[in-house]
Length: 503
Ligand SMILES: *Cc1c(COP(=O)(O)O)cnc(C)c1O
Image (cartoon, rainbow, N blue to C red; front, top):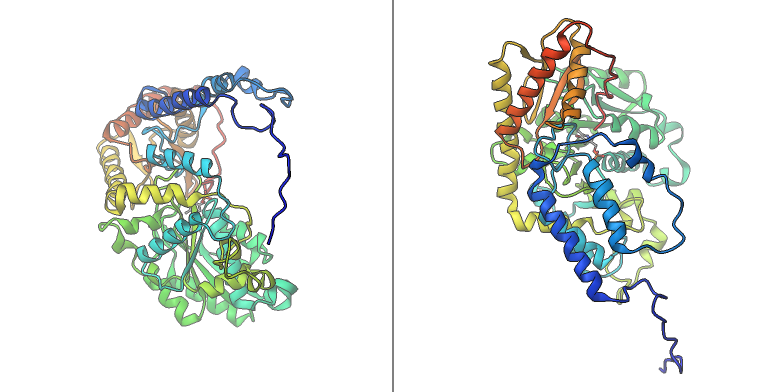
């Protein structure tokens, strides 16, 4: 067959494409950027953990839509001067707020490579898809899942939990739910999680069309683990009332204090009651990489699905959420469009399905797998597991320092890498709310808050691989100093605590 080509190919004028007119210039600029970012990470301790954004800096980003080009060097200077100094701070070893990963230089390089390749991982037959499949296989092996298990990268665990609820929904109601909606039968379905579960589970139930009332919030024991007897009783009561229990969401690492539900007991209960057993392992599931922590996750290997974030304990740069589903067919049943799926080619660029677009709502998707692949291969799972175990050892060190300090008190048992404590004072909630903001604004450390039984706690979640005992010591000194200042009468102001379950 002949292919008609244009006789006089249209030749682009300089500036008509978006490629640089001078590759040497952009190469030099690129090397400067790379060096600056290495310096940023290498010298991160010299910076404050976080700095409040000055009004004039914020104002610079209320600019008009740029119609004319600007010099790359000038644009980069704006980034360097006005964005870099006011980032979240989670690269810094003093960052202990919420549950944020620290990232790594390796992950940063991989992100650059992925952007250069500009792959779209919705589907088709190209090697980036095989890299994602490699991560699926590795994740399967981490958790002892069978060959037919499937997995997909998503933004984060909020999304992975939503996808899991949708897979469980299709498994309970059959694929016709995708045409007809949840209907009368779906309105009877009920799901179960503990009071300490992340708020995104409630949102997932809402978005999936069940409504948040269909999620039963089960009491926890003093260690914040779901009360399995109370769960069993609630399931029985709901069945008695004509409802149809279908899903249990366990937590492997609660966001407030790091509790791990009794996964073995829950897996047995789910098997007995024929319920979908999903584990929200956002940060805790990767504890499986540490021989010290893995036994605490016993039972996770029986889950029907696991949601986790490589961007938390895995130290992969944001974002890298992941969902693993034991039965790949049930996963595809929830998302694949059968017409498109069955018509796929066996040869050429459109071969090689099933594709990630059959496993979730996204069609165009970035190459999150690459930074995860580089991270897992470069460091190896033993070293990552050791980093994870070390954050727990540091939490133990912080716990010991608190116990030895009469001005401080522990507010929850330390089970993993999260420590909740407070400065003893009259009007303790207000004083401690002030202390946390003072410490954040000082740039010394960045803890967050949570509320435990009505008591506002200073919450230090140690996730970053760079955090060391000096950072724990700096946190303690800062809390004591601001605590002394704030507990002098008249020096507390009202501080709204952030929602306890936000991240
Ligand atoms: C962080 C977290 C989430 C939410 O994950 P994102 O990646 O922020 O969407 C859900 N559950 C738990 C237990 C978490 O720690």
